[in-house]
Amino acid sequence: MIDHLDRICDAAAGRGEQIQRKILEHLGHGHQQKTLPDFTIQRAAELLGVSISRIRALEGSERFPPPRARQAGAIQQRIYNYNEVNRLRELLGERPTRPKTAPPLNITFSNLKGGVAKTTHAIHCAQYLAVRGHRVLLVDADPQATATGAFGILPDIDLGEDDDLSGVILGTPEAIDGIVRKTCWDNLDLIPASLSLQRVDLLIAREPAATTQQLGSPLLRLRRGLGRLVDRYDVIVVDTPPALGMLSLNAIAAANLLIIPIEPHMYSLGSSVQYFRILRDVIRRHRDSIGVQRINMLLTRVDEQSPETQGVIKLLASAYGGMCLTNHMPLSRELQRVATDHLGLYEIEQPRGARETFTRAVQAMDRVNADIFSQIRSLWDLHPDAPAVTDRPSMLDDML
Image (cartoon, rainbow, N blue to C red; front, side, top):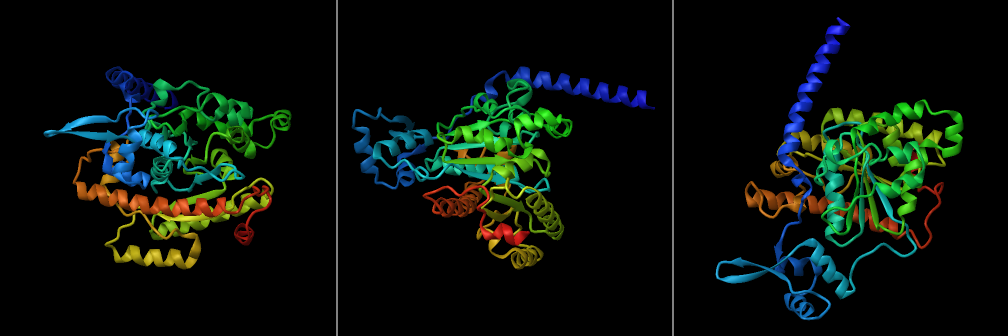
């Protein structure tokens, strides 16, 4: 029976690899050639917070090249993308950055459950910050590599064994220097993921004591790696697998802000209780390693027409109070469409569905990300001096 099962698995893997090769041959390397959407001077002025005439005046200077244009009926229409808007910000001297005394703020999206739009919100949070001019690093710590695919990278064809976080967590912090990748966004970089990350937990469990003594606590290795990048970014966003294994625990230990996406269903309340109990136990065992300063819960995939959903939202609010972000993300067909296309809402120029549906989705995502950014700014306001690892706010102590 075992031999028969072995043959079935081998044959299935072989057929899958054949199909995969055909797909990759069809794609070539075009899958990596992502571009940012173009928009008009009106949208550029809105992003910059200046008048259209001010942009035209800037473009008349020698420091800025003539704008691109496209034909719109009988007229030539000026067009821009986010990278060009950021160059205009630099000319205006208004490129945003973190406070000089504050290190990059690390945000980790984490939950025990899958299917709660965790990766979706990690990607859109990173892109939202990049749209507004911040220097952002998105770290994909999930072996499923969904965030990696959203940036046009196919792990099976584009990545080698040492191109993800494995070398950082199983080796030395210096390994992070070689795995940061540029994207089509000038100010948004990516550390990709691949299936090889699945071996991390097993290899850590088998790690000899001498190796652990040499490399230090396995829980702190991602934080030490990210510490080598402090001069390059304002915000670091980490997407995690739907589990609390070594990858997620490293991401939590490295985080200042922990975002827990959760669907407003009764079973989600039970899973959140389990999550907080596990997190409590981790905090108790590693008090000096957890640097989280704030925890927020983000309600996702909210059916705004359902009375039952509204009842669960009230229950979650009564249980978790101020931990819940003010805004939530409703169910959206447009989010489903862009996920199928491996795009983010902020990368869409012409939606496949109705423009009204798309606009509502973008506005809802903007409100959620504005909530998160307000948390970022409040943590930046705690400086001039960065808090020590052990100086956690009382909220985490209350959880103990």
